[in-house]
Amino acid sequence: MNKVKIVLVLSLSFFSLITISDEVRVYKDKLLVNDSLFYMKGVAYHPVPLGSKSRSFENIDLDLMLMEEAGINTIRVYEPIDDVKILNKLVKHNIKLIVSFGYNQNGFYDILSGSYIDYVNKFKDHDAILLWELGNEYNYHPEWFGGDIENWYKALNEASKKIHLHDNKHPVSTAHGDFPNEQARKLVTDIDLWGVNVYRWDQPLSILEEWAEVSSKPIYFAELGSDSYMTVTRDIYKEGVSELAQADANSIMLTDVLDNIELSAGIIVFQFVDGFWKAGNPKEQDIGGWAPNSSGVPYDGTANEEFFGLVDINRNKKMSYKSIQDIFTKFDIQAVSKLDSK
Image (cartoon, rainbow, N blue to C red; front, side, top):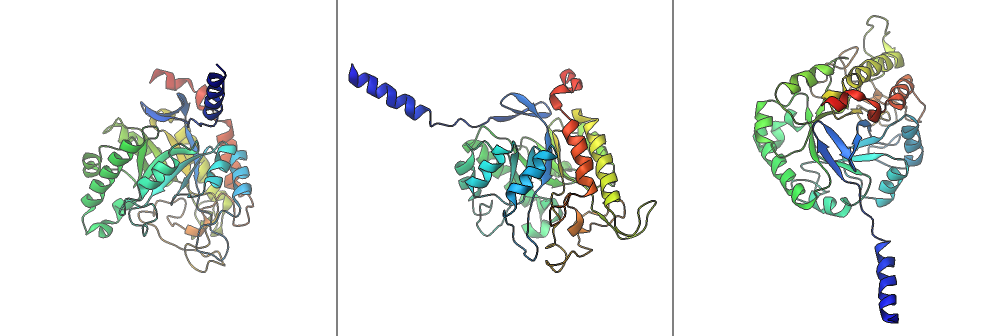
């Protein structure tokens, strides 16, 4: 009898150590986290310190505090975070993570080497994980795949299938440059939802209307945003640094998307902090920079790559941070009645 009691106590003690991770799944055109509607109010996050060209989480505590204060519930990173302490911090601040796997990242959890599956198995039970995302705008770079983008689409689809074999608690997506054409949709059948990086002036809603005509799969904005530098004077926005232009553009875009949330599963604003490493001397903030199909960046048609942050390199809040904070903190998907009719 005493032996039975001892076994029971040990079993209960062991059970208390087991953590059951959140379950994320696609439902119609939305995400559910533990069967509750979840809409991504997100930001792209690649923090590179002043003077460096490499990502660092030295300001993670301040950054997460600022994100939570702004109503942000999701971050999207461009390479996996292989540090459970950082993932734990995300959970503490109620922020979910979109993990992006590159095709060829010199074996660092990439698709080419197959090591991405190691990451999936290592962290699939962590509550920070929201989505597995394969590639970023690779449709603009057939030269990376022997000159034939079909090679990428096939690799993408096979990678998605493999993830599903290892993890049934998190959806798989990709970050596609603008609208996925017929070739992409035909070859990529296994992903659960599509992410799209959209720079169509301040009118991103048009891509959602086009998508609804060709697919029933959920779609979200993997990138959407504007920079705070005007290369020319246009309307009320003067040439030079213009936080007003960025704030106005981002406010218009987010408001339009959220007023039509039945069409999307979320928004990832590009990006949280200015990136001095992108266009020139990493110790200085340079104008310029180039990104594929970025001529639609409002309001000058130029992607000034080092000026997209909602906060500057020193974490001072720009006007766009404050306007997005106002929009995100007032938005509650659970209170939006139009979803009930879907």
